[in-house]
Length: 251
Ligand SMILES: Nc1ncnc2c1ncn2[C@@H]1O[C@H](COP(=O)(O)OP(=O)(O)OP(=O)(O)O)[C@@H](O)[C@H]1O
Ligand SMILES: [Mg+2]
Image 1 (cartoon, rainbow, N blue to C red):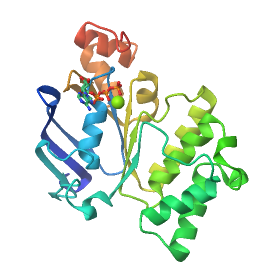
Image 2 (image 1 turned 120 degrees about the vertical axis):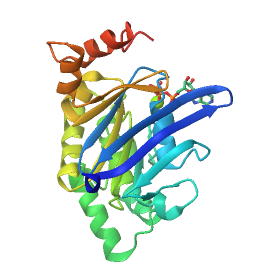
Image 3 (image 1 turned 60 degrees about the vertical axis):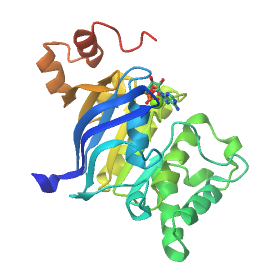
């Protein structure tokens, strides 16, 4: 069972000054799963991702990656095991899709044939082969989002972190993006995915941690969570309402 765990997090706590944003949370990410953090604005999703990504270093608790101590803020080797797809788009509008991927691939340490292969595969997975030579400023919002994901995944990290990747994406592009993520998972990737859209978590995630005010208030498969909360419809929004007495989207 332990072999099955890629990242284990125990008692993770982070405070911005006196404001505790993540309050001693514990969870395991299993190899090959899509793990979701679902919660309202301010729940602590981005802070959790930032600690795992090494963007915040002064957290308390313990993280282990593949069984070994994990300190991504201090060790480049730890950081290289991750791909990060940030909440804001991090691609260059004035470059083409292919040029963007070449640039991010070099940043991730790729060169030569390995770089060419990674760019080709990134364009394929994101469905942008036909538009690879066009400037990103000509892309739709959904195409930019997919390119953003490909840019974070070029070095084929073991774990890909995606923070609210569907904000500002229309439903059709959203479905296209889910296909890209499923393709990555089929390729052996493990994914962590944050969202405040319960439909997405329900559709895409093998397991979900529901966060509220810095804590994990429920963790399991969407079906299990609904079952435990006695929500017959299976709807995670209702699960959240039942657990907290308020709606996921009341802010
Ligand atoms: N740089 C910061 N300085 C001070 N407080 C912060 C900072 N970033 C986040 N916080 C606070 O920490 C808490 C958790 O914020 P976080 O951004 O992790 O939530 P989130 O779940 O990602 O929310 P959202 O859905 O709005 O992205 C909130 O109370 C927020 O106000
Ligand atoms: Mg956030």
